[in-house]
Length: 211
Image (cartoon, rainbow, N blue to C red; front, side):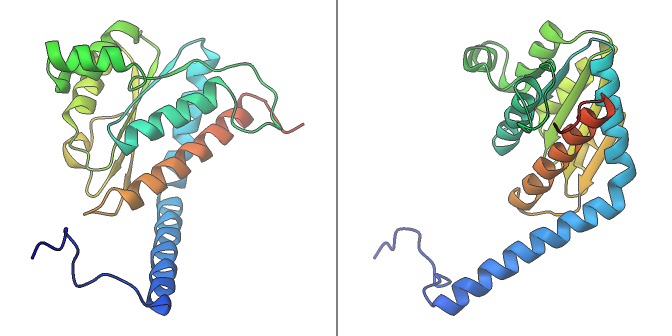
């Protein structure tokens, strides 16, 4: 009889459920600690690069797929609207390329999905802008192609990756690789934390402080 996809590992015991919570969250915390200890210098450099981009009157473009698209939109919104209510500052020009459903569907239909972000970088990216590509595997061709166009247009580039970095490893001016493979979830948790740290540092570098 079809069991609807359920397997024998289904958890029902309360103590095992709580043990799973503890194991998962502690692993996530340890992974973030490792990323921080091994990448504090590059994270600070990413923040400096982004702050310099804004100081020059230029824009930051973000791209990612799936959960990384959500992270791209999340970070872009915190730059354009606000990160913390205690920091008063002007809006900072940031665009999440995954936000325009009409452009994404038209691009996927007319050009093929691997070209959608590249086309938008071609449209919006200018020399001196910054492109931030997020890919938990490092193998997202839509992001890779966008990064190639960004570099061709004289943009600086940042890559937030996972696993061993995939095909994107070494492509960006600055990169961070979360050393976790097999699932995207733990990598995405690190990416959004790193993104928040970068935004906090950007505000400090630009002289916007808590009020």
